[in-house]
Image 1 (tube, rainbow, N blue to C red):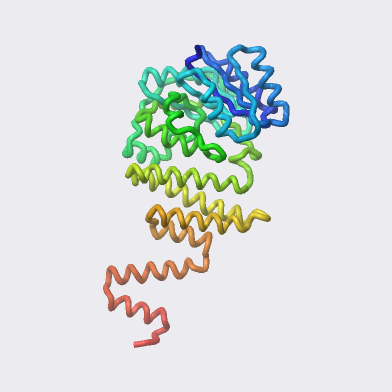
Image 2: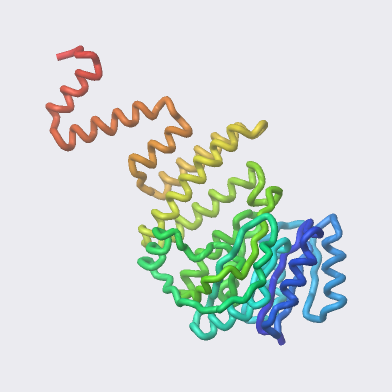
Length: 343
């Protein structure tokens, strides 16, 4: 029985699917099984899946009506036989030794998750399959270590791909079906439960940038799931009392809200979604009692309510005067603002 199960959700992937499957089946690590879930493709993807299943006994394919990537991954997980799971997207490519090196790092480092770096580009780099050393470092996943990694912009990737993961971790928190960015939301929980991650600092996974993909395309209502994922992550780390980690993700959340608000205003027919972004954000921040700095508030006002920005900074100045210089100084400043009127 295969100890490693590679799960590949497939949807409209006929252009790149063979290249992806060849890279997986050409791995130096064995035994492994490959589970393909055709998620209602209308192109030749389903037939390609059946073709590879016929010619390689390690491949099993399943077909379902379109239900999204999360549902496809969860379906494959139920069918998988391996105790280690590796997720690969159907338009990506993995290095010939990726699974071997990740497995060795996980076992030698006694870690339930191992991960590598990935290269992101529209076309596969010519030197991608070059020699790799496979050294690794064990990273503790406590609050202090994770916050430090976030501050250094070295956060261990919050995508499901480019990793080897113990099956029970995934089963403890499956992907949320019907959502996009579902792996971002789940992986943050897995790494905390793992407590330790073996990190291989080499690019062993090729992530194909595709402007037409779910996460790289123009603004749509599905884009709002990115805010959902970040809100869920903020709740999770806030619930652990990891305020330093939560604050790192808070900045990502505010930047995403500003960006999506701007995209919505500029997308014909979706202008009203800008208001939805703002309302949901305010309700979330108030409901979770998440404090914002004056700079963060100003950035939100500048995008969403530029006319209020001047008033906001004026109020900040008044509060600062009242706190530092006292009530008399505050009254003097108010008189200046009012043009000297009043006693």
